[in-house]
Image (cartoon, rainbow, N blue to C red; front, side):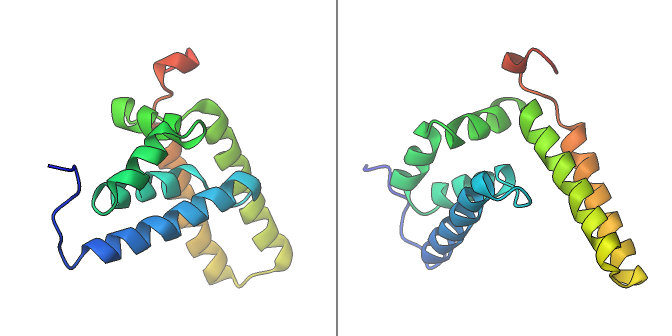
Length: 132
């Protein structure tokens, strides 16, 4: 067997989702307010169902591979990624406040950002970080 998933009508959908998530994750590497880790994890998940070649490439990638390995092995997020995430969350909330978004929108945003922050902070750091 070639390691290729059997054909299913959902395979092209998974492949497209993987490409979009990979693009968003790559954007997150250079754009400070775009998260990288969740998009790369989603891309790996989608490629595992559609493209073993791209899935293997992601796992072997020098930047993205460790993110996936940490998540799979420990459900962990590295400390630098947590710091960048928290700084981004604070910046987004501050910009919304400065721009005067409607109070209802700001409240919804704060709840969503708070839930994201709580999830990120609840994840351990991988053992190699020396923490967690």
